[in-house]
Length: 543
Image 1 (spheres, helix red, strand yellow):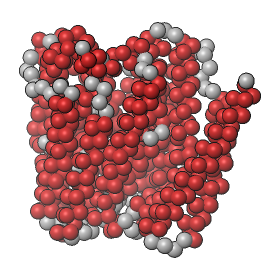
Image 2 (cartoon, one colour; image 1 turned 180 degrees about the horizontal axis):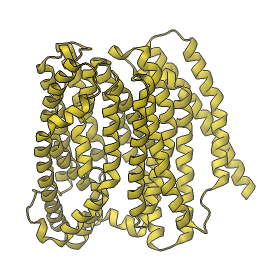
Image 3 (cartoon, one colour; image 1 turned 180 degrees about the vertical axis):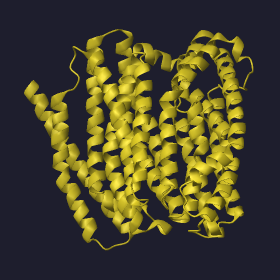
């Protein structure tokens, strides 16, 4: 009976809402461990850039080793948990853990069959994929060798599609049982394995090598190390599934299980929500490959975008979803509007200080992130501009995610799907304009602007639809947002002072990092104090 109760946590959340303590605890757990995973992912990009340098080989490797992750996202990706968790929870409620294992095993059988076929197709198409990633190299001889080395790399990392499927299945099983720590922390292990692999490869074969001088052994070491990290990640997630009693073997009988068939159909319908951003990312990486070190800049900008959004607006959206879903289930428009306004206020409050800090301190931040072989002014300047664009994009992307969660709470998945498609189209069209820009840092800035344009288009669609849904309830809480803006203005002089100190400071990287850290904490403290005072004044005036 105890296991049944714990296993149905998500079902209760969907229908009746969690207690504030449970929601806060789970949200804090997810946010904390996800932050660690995202931070190691950011460190991974920085280390690869520092070891491999601003070279065409670095472009090919950084774009090539993420191909399996992009391909898996096209199959299922993040939407897997959104679709599969409710099905597993309902199965536990209907027939206990045995029925849940049966459902999970049959869906796993379908996913693994699809993933295995995709691995085979990716291996066959490896030369074509490698051609798209090396097309931007101007010298024919270098382009030919890049094609061969990238093809070899893709063949070595192709099994990661299947391993990612296993990892996500294990992660989903844990979340269905209300366990979040290992599921959110395990990706950090994958990142650390790849970091170690790149450092050892650089130590043994050399750093900053370009296509002409990269030995085949180095490519093999990097490819095998990358796949080993994903395998260890999958093993940890499956261990977590076993620990919650949901480890099961894949079954071929998914066609005979109505629930499994329903899950696979919902999954197929929802693929576009994650597939469009993944496809857009692939286009951006392919275009960035025309600039030496360009993939590093774009990939680091993308990693920063998601790292910031997951500790601000996206974290709020995960915490706000139970209340939104509960109000939507009861068809209580007043409560739904109240929950939305609260979530919107918290999202803006969490995102604005990050926007100011990164926008004002983008130059010093770029100078710290560009290490080793990447310490070139030709890349640091464009990276700083890209980070300033990302500062705005993380707020827009977070609000879009919060709005999408609110629509999902109302079982409206049509607008989020269309928003993803529109964002993909806008991103690709704007990115195509980068081909008219010289193949230098300005092209990279244009590509990151394409990300922002896509996020704006998606957010506009989602929030416009949500505004109509909420009517006649108020859409925003003006007083709360005004307080957040006052606090933001108050922290700007502190952030500017940190920039000035960093500008006149002549210390090393560690001392510069210490100045940025201390200054960032001081600016956030000012923001928090002014916001608290503003909110307290508003509360006393209301009473």
